[in-house]
Length: 217
Image 1 (cartoon, rainbow, N blue to C red):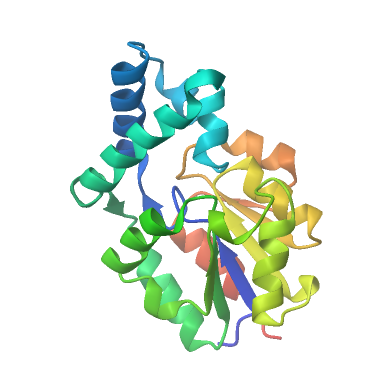
Image 2 (cartoon, one colour):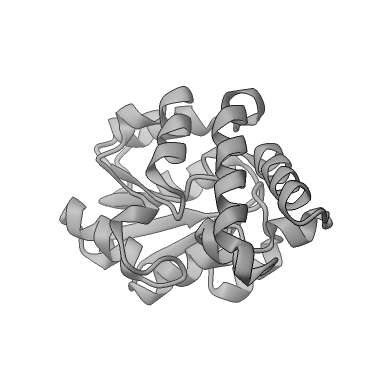
């Protein structure tokens, strides 16, 4: 089967890799160590999809850099113990790659941490490129990261689709003129993805596969 897109752009955390427990543990470690505070899961996950430093400013602007540093130290140290693979994701990437689709990751995560997951879960070999936090001046929900991925791939917006678990992924894609698909297995409620403008919100990997591969070009 020939896929309907020239390129598929994927968010990383919460979309290709299950980092929920890693993220929550990292937040709790940093917030308790630096501020002596704790928060409910929904508060800790509310900013997922945006750069870490921006998320930390929500808790304490004056100590955001320290919070981000302590979070990152814990996150990198515990990554392999707490990160998990979403069943079926690697097979989906393999099949899209075999179809000749150009695949990319567009993430607000720093390169060092993102590469740990891309390599550990066998994602890197399928990617034509990856846009990390360091690669653009502006970040999701700005369109700049999506536009950078399209530039590298030589792909027009109308021939690409962005897949992500956060409204920031959807907003970034839409602002770049790219169709956006949501996934329901990440950190944000499906309703927020629909409100942001997602064409569909896939409930599982097989539903996402069906949508991505259902039409011949």
